Image (cartoon, rainbow, N blue to C red; front, top):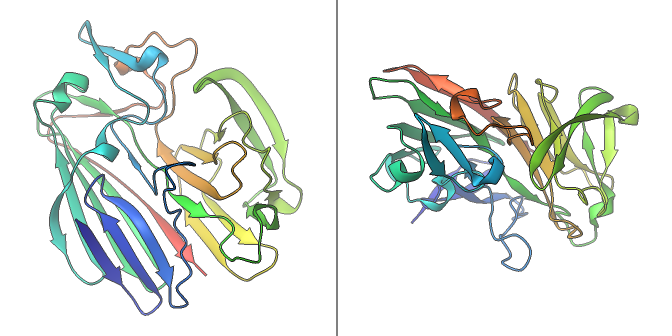
Length: 288
């Protein structure tokens, strides 16, 4: 099932499977969202829950029990229930099942709300803990954007624009984090895109380094800006060598390190949510 939202500037489609954005078009029918080519990357904008990134050896431990969980969790592959919908907003909901509790032994209510305001799409995540004990989880976004947007452009015509010039990058190996950091300097706050940029996996930034980022063209005025104030982690990724899309990913959570002991209560970036409480976060996408 698909839900459609519309404003004077944008038309949006969302799949109930994974509550995943699958199309954002402007009034000129320019498609901003990657169209999930099976031969390149078969997703549009998956929601990451109840983990972000990869677990060491693909499992975590809780109360002396081992639970297997694949990279980025299971929400992206499950049907969400549509709770409400209007012309400019909709809310999807996912709850635990006997099947999810095999891999993730917690009760939860996870809601995703999309709100369209002219050329801006706000996404809000809300996780509620209905149980009598704490739950441990991460949540994040993984939207992929067509790059280039126009037929007369190339991947190399695009660049990322940041709020500052200096960053510390967390390095990855087979999806897991190294202790080693790499210092990066982006002259004029810009990083030019090229097909070799993601040869060693995603660019990962910790400690709230990215609060606003824009995907810009050097040949047109089109721009996608993502605002995620105070989100603790951020990833930038594209399929190695593809040159067809780029993902801008705000995260509340991060992949395990090579030194992880697999204990979920000690996991880097994990959110501990007390009984009968709610965690809420949001980010905005602005399309020009």
